[in-house]
Amino acid sequence: MTIEFNVTVDDFIAFNLFHFKNSPAFQRQLLITRSAFAFILAAILSLPCPVLVGQLSYVAFLFPIVGIVVGIIAFLAYPRMHEQNLRKQLPKMLNEGGNEGVIGKQKIVITPEAVINETPAGEQKAFWSSVDKIVETSDYIFLYVSSMSAAIIPRSAFPSEEQRNTFLELAKQYHHSATGRRSSTISS
Image (cartoon, rainbow, N blue to C red; front, side, top):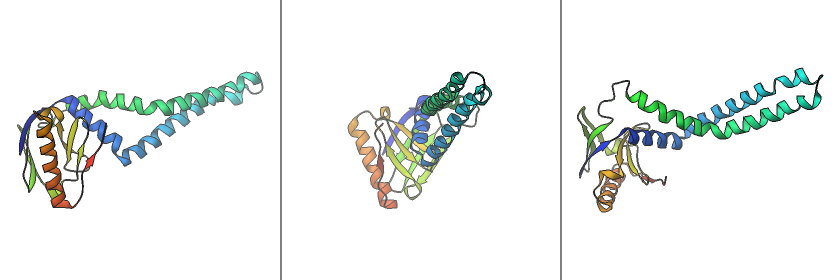
């Protein structure tokens, strides 16, 4: 089965945001980073407390309270700030060059043996046994050819829901036959 479509910058960003949100390693790193950020911010805002303890005692106790509240807010806001930063940085990274074939015209051919991704920059062939996983979201199908990269197939690549379902079921069947693993459906 063959499909032809265009991958946009928005599709690329959507894949990366999905990947970061669903990567256990990235989520662990995000938790560590946001915890450290919140703790350091709270500590800095609490620093005036020992200096003021001898002067205005009621004011001195406000600094740690403000520090803790700001730290909690920072902890809760950090994932959103990080997502906004990714949305801003990913297009810049694409413009650095060497990304021919990532954005633009794509042609995906699936056969019982392999998934083939043809772009104006060349052709990538991955045997189903080397495909890490197939993930379906409400807007995309991601054929992970490694733990960090995937063929990004937007819902709009299919003229009908029936054709999308046929493609997806065929890909899952080929993948399962080659690996014995079932694919994921994730709602987002």
